[in-house]
Image (cartoon, rainbow, N blue to C red; front, side, top):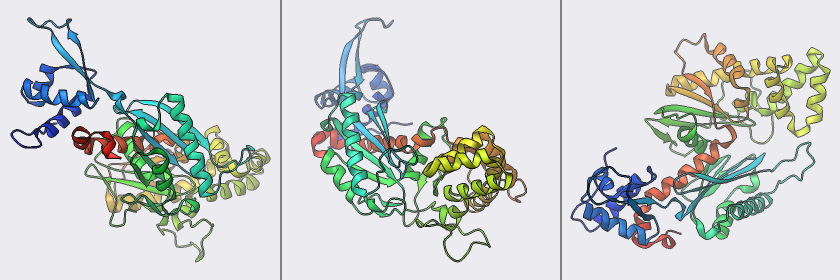
Length: 422
């Protein structure tokens, strides 16, 4: 990519420093001369910017490169100090809380995961919004402590949650699966506790960014990532950019109404949309229970009963194990899901549809069923794959957003210092 530099303007040093930082972040270390050549600046201009960056603690001059084959004076090496600060990525769902801490180069240095729903495991159920926030803050504190860093070392934190979120304000407008988090409680409490900028967004949108960043090196400029679990939602990438829609809820495919036989009242509680009522976790468990009884599979039925609130996971495990009744259920919901894929294809025509969320565990078994039910569609269908990051896609998307925000605001870091970005 062509480097953007500035010459002879008041903000020359800031723009040039940004170009230098971008380049240094991709290398272990570089000589000053090689860096000057890479960004298209004179050695003197690069040296001035490097001195300013070094004063801010963002770069570090190293030893002379005595291994170089170049004649004359050994080259002066310089490196980006990725350890100068850290960013936080979090994912919140009704089932669990996941987080990761990375340095400024995106290298993950610590992770953690905490169950929020107990099911049949006997652990305490974390239900209210206040309980979720307290669990989140204590988990963050424990993770930071294990990594040997403090909140003063955090430069940015991004969080993915279910529902409809206003990223500009951090207000969660609608979150049927976790109503206690509606409003600004999460953003406000995190900002007070961590003291760094906090960004909230829809979990599927962040998962889509995470999948493109670290999921099997996906760089498609046209893809849809569908989170398929208890609920169903999608992240849409068009022309290489995440598409949000006029109300920031583009991709809420769970509310598609594609079936003529949907009853007038919701089939399930918790504000499920028509589509997710027919393909989501509750429906999968209902179908599995019926299939076990119909097939006389007492072992499978007992397995579902013993799982309690974890019955959805038990069905998915049974699919992986090849249990016939569970495979029949996957075929039924795959046929229904294929109608959603066909609708997405007709409107957006993406190159790729990635299936993420809990159903991704079913892997090729699920993909084969969906492809089979798409085979008679008149339009050519997009490629189908399952997420490689699975449950960690949201966390990686959150980390990426944090790093991108630091990139976007890096001139403030150079000009005014980190404290003024908070």
